[in-house]
Length: 428
Image (cartoon, rainbow, N blue to C red; front, side, top):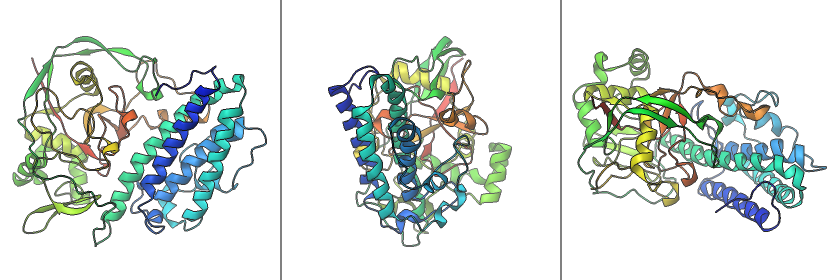
């Protein structure tokens, strides 16, 4: 859907109202299978309760749009600015992230009222704000909607970890991932080197960390035609991959020892064979599906074991632009929430969806990057240290967030974030 230009009104504003309503409804649909108890649990410091995600996004719209731009707007509850601020230091103090699961109140019913109040006010704002102020509102509105879609993905990531901590392996939904598919042969697709351009050029919406567009030099390289599978990874485990320090970065080897890693997150050796926890419950591992929930350290160690490497994010972006031809892939709108086997085919497959692909690139600013002014400038720039870039999207990613320039990022030890592996190698 083509969204409204900044100086247009009427029907085009109604398009924004519909877009807003659709995004907010999707959040509620994702939360609907969960009980109030499910929505309150925080299973580790990096996970946020479902009800916190729902409230935080209402706080975002209330803080950055309604308060500054809707005349006479009164906040729903003054305490929510402290409880549901995530990391915006310029806005004020916030409740400690690792303690979000200790908040039994406000409950899910009160948060539903909060969302409804904010939704009504946002509709009034979109339809009544004057043309001059609309120029300020629209960019923040678009950022907010994309931000909520990011939290939809986080909601699924986080509730998977929450439910996996329950010894009964409860299912979030009943749609079990398909079985019996094939991965297809792993082949190598070659790309020329040279002086290239990457990054968003500004013609369409992108987060600020996707630009500015700039030039990079690439040596000739090859990418694997498909993702690394569970069967591939089992061979790494069987070859003592988790007990061979020569395969690991120093920090990665320390994490293996400190965390006791022996397999990807959610895997369990049941004696009769390996099983995996999915959002549809626990089931035997499918050898042909992409390995998921590995850290950057595990991805890098596997690549070393195979005598290969991970791609840089510039290599990945150039390959996606030249070979992918679109953003078709297994994404959240298929409502499976688990990566699927590649199947047979030619060229690069699974570049969009299934699992986020760890790259060898640290998350750092592009040349000429400047954070936005004010509190919204804290959105991405402040995290450009001690993180690694992932590309491509996953089975829990909204379709609008899969584009060649999109830069996801997590700490290298993170495993709950649907991270997977695509191998690369030098072509020269």
